[in-house]
Length: 384
Ligand SMILES: Cc1ncc(COP(=O)(O)O)c(C=O)c1O
Image (cartoon, rainbow, N blue to C red; front, top):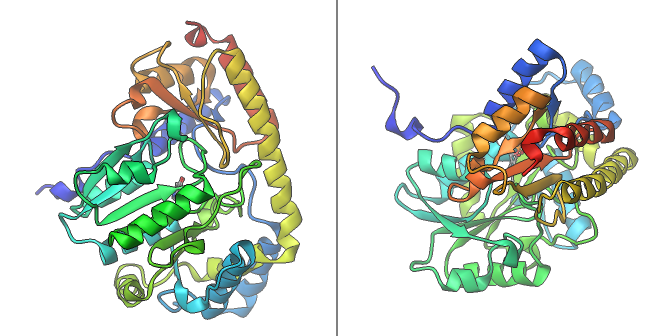
């Protein structure tokens, strides 16, 4: 007996680093998790209160496969309010995290053998999930000159028009944002070329001065992906959604019925409170903390001689460590073993240049971020 060849995909190395960091915490008690894109804060108080209340009042049975109608309406309103666009509950498909939305969307939209484009560097689970589904992944090499983001000129230069294109703005691992005009041009290009644009907008709300626009402001032919994980500080609650064009709604519903049945009921009921007025001050506080962390990180990295992408949003610094190593995995392991600071090796995000890059997440508390930077600054591994 053996496992399928489809499952022979790369690990999601962040999760492997997290495992090593947890082991370090058990053995030394000094681990600092700068490796994971996860707020150190819990869900907004309003969500927790709502969860307590619904536990006593709801059966928590299966829900509609695409989410309870009230939540879908709340999410639709969220998009109407933030982007001044016309979105209805019918457009919204609720899933188990944006990760669940991606798997179902890829299954619904692409045949095995289809080519789907994404940026390099980019979020590894796109590549690995598409590979497991038998799709060909076309990586578009994006450098600092375009803020590590794709442009229409790059799409024009491709040998073939891909069946789909995934963009993320703000992006993981770089935190960079696509200019609204460029995103609009990409959305128009995709619509004109019958290429399904998948716009990962799960870091929206977490920007520092540079506005992130939504792909649906230009074209509703593509898909927008959202999640409560990042801005709403609810990673483990596992709730995400997709805004989908009509031809994908029923296929995604049927796939959801069969593959997951529905997203967790308690999360669906509780998450509605995340979009309400009561949660706003808390979420604003988190954003302000990330903004403070970002300034501290930028200054400290510059002092250490590390150049990084301009983090317009999210909570990541994508750093060049090429003068220190050409094996980012071994280097990050050594940093963890000698300092207790967990960093993510760049190979997760960039299969070509990632061995000379690492990602630092500043999603944690300011105290933790400051302590981690102090330990790194004192480490011989950071001296070239
Ligand atoms: C760009 C991007 N998309 C999607 C996800 C998946 O998030 P979730 O499944 O928690 O919504 C992540 C997680 O880090 C991410 O960075």
